[in-house]
Every structure is written in structure tokens, then in C-alpha cells.
Image (cartoon, rainbow, N blue to C red; front, side):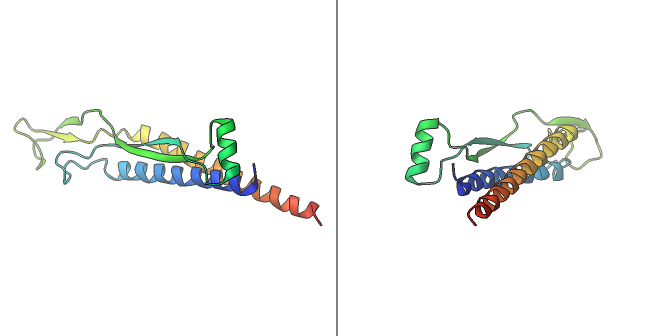
Amino acid sequence: MNFLENLNISASALTAQRTRMNIISANLANINTTRTAEGGPYRRKDVVFAAGPPAPSFQNELESKLSETSGMVEVSEIVEDPRPPILKYAPEHPDADASGYIRTPNINLVEEMVNLIAASRSYEASLTAVDATKKMSLKALEIGR
């Protein structure tokens, strides 16, 4: 595996985790949104990762066939949480039904914060891998002097 391939794998992980953090941020920003353009409360979203295709080259193609994995990661889809909205009694709210209940998003603040911390740690790990790859390539250049 060469240095550029290592950087490409780390870059794909950074991009995937950035997307995950953006989705989590959108969930947190809409934690009290009871009305959307589609109708009803905001629906919590989540990111699904999948192994991505390797960069197109003979060496990468050969290695992926031999190892059955490419090491790359990509966001395969963004899915809505199937859990139903939470009902709260608020008869004075403009979105309340005839019984006085409003439907609020199915977002758990603690769950979102744990997901955000996990995504942040994964992002940091990928940055550490980029830094280690950079240091190894610099050491390799010094050996050649």
C-alpha cells in the first residue's frame, strides 16, 4: 500500500465523518421543529456508511481483488428514523390537534450528543492517520538523502 492510497483512505473517512457530523447538527438544530414543508414534525436522520470503490488503477484493482476490501468508506445513504414522533400536551401551541397534543421530533438529545462525540473521535483518528502517513513519507525521503 502506498502513501497516496493511505491518504485517500483517510480522506474518505474524514469526508464520511464530516457528513455524519452535519446530519447530527441538523438533527440538533431541528429538535423542536413541529412543522416541516413535507408536513408533520422533523424526522431524525442518520447516516449509513459502506465500503467505497477503490481509486481506479491496476494496483488498486489487484489489491482489492486479493483482499476483498478497498479500505475506502463512503456515505451510502441518509435514512430517516422510523420511530414515531413524540406526543406532548401543549393546547396553546399553534400545531396542537383537537386534543391539545403536538407531535415533536423523535430526537433524543443524549443520543445525538453521544453520536456527535463518536463522530468527532473518528474524525480525530483519521486526522492522526493522515499525520502519521505524512511523517512516514518525510522519514522515507530523509532515508533517500
